[in-house]
Length: 116
Length: 114
Image (tube, rainbow over all chains, first blue to last red; front, top):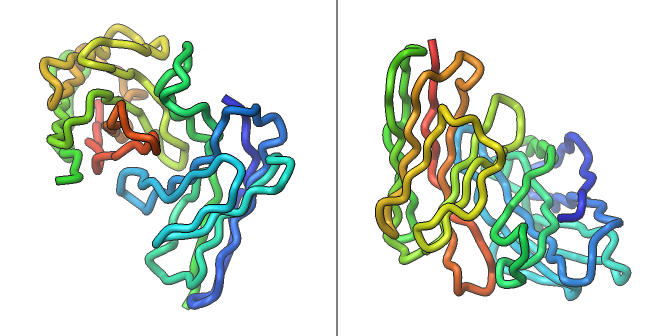
């Protein structure tokens, strides 16, 4: 799986949009970008994933650059409960098979702190 | 039911003890995972089971012994652990046929080895 680079930490004011960047310059053609978050003392939680088109769900939006070398996770109206570590992960989809079938490898992530 | 349930939530054991961690899901998922997470570090993959068979072992020491007795249950047997094995142990599951490839995680079992 391709390596990702994320800022160590970010701050955001409550009610404002939180934009979390991720660089994945070695991403290959069949690899997806996944985002998970981990709130303190809980298990990681899936947020969103995408291949090359921008994606939106009830939690967040994912913007992937045209060359696919970077992406941004957007939380449109951050709340205090969004304070967590956010992980950007690049991986081949599980149905791709191969020796890394099924793997999900976490990088260091970004600690997002939402302030009142 | 979209839950992965892990028991116990907390476990304290001595280095000569034998204990087990248990993970259960009833979502019909046929891929199940064990991760280890040290404080302020990301989760590290330990084992992956697919259709009740071990498919990935990330060179984990033999003092950790996984077992998948059926499609809903995953165990991690612990024996002769070291204090440095103290960590949060996370279980996850995934629907093999699902397009998202999303992993569902439990809340973890926090292990302390004395």
